Length: 339
Image 1 (cartoon, rainbow, N blue to C red):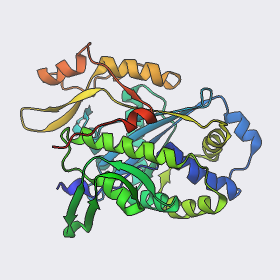
Image 2 (cartoon, rainbow, N blue to C red; image 1 turned 180 degrees about the horizontal axis):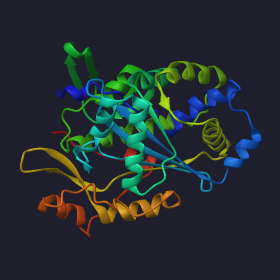
Image 3 (tube, rainbow, N blue to C red; image 1 turned 45 degrees about the vertical axis):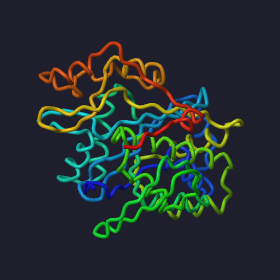
Image 4 (cartoon, helix red, strand yellow; image 1 turned 90 degrees about the vertical axis):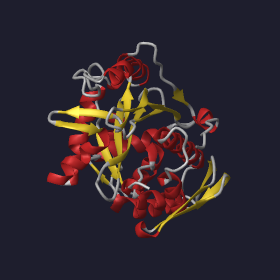
């Protein structure tokens, strides 16, 4: 197992975040109707970041956008192995945060990563939130667990890391620690890390289903107490008001759509595995699902391609590539193949 497997998982998702922010409302921190009305009609985005415990690599990058006009939440997965080159640095995109955190503090690293992704994606990213595994476990436990369809038996034990995963195949009621284990598990996926990303979507769908029943005040306070100390964020009070009022004010709930940057897994001549992004399909995806956030074209500086690598360059420029958007019903139909 890789050392990076001590993952600080970031799977509160937009809905989980809304629950935490709801607690703020009940606590009287953000009760301001005028400010709430001022935020309506806009589009707000937040980058959720999960770092590993050893090297501070961002093993989870999830961009969430709440469209107040259409009552939609759009989520974009950015694979951790995505190739990127920024200035004199080159490597996997999950190393940007670690590089900045090594020479500064985490808040500056989060701001640097958010800015870099905003430039690359050509999207306005309003806020960021860094979560850890304890926050995820606390959320799930506060909700009384989450029902998840486990694609195959997940068993792994590493005493050195204090890691013990034992989850059977089929529909399981996961506790907080089991949910973290489900998200940390990396062995057995035929499609490698892309299989793990599919498992993340399965968890997202299950959590969304659980959150169809709004939490009561006691649950909100419990969630707040468990999660707030574990979150590093630049969300303002107006942001809090916006997320909460829009989520709770949607009579028929918010519709959810999940996508992933288009591309392919790729191993270069040195044996290094990357996720090579496809530019044309990414451009179409962002225009179709994130248009109000757009500030420019996708990857204008060509930071996500190694120009002299003919295979990576072909994947990057392939005009025949496509993208896919998943609804919660689509996610339930995902069949994860076991190696």
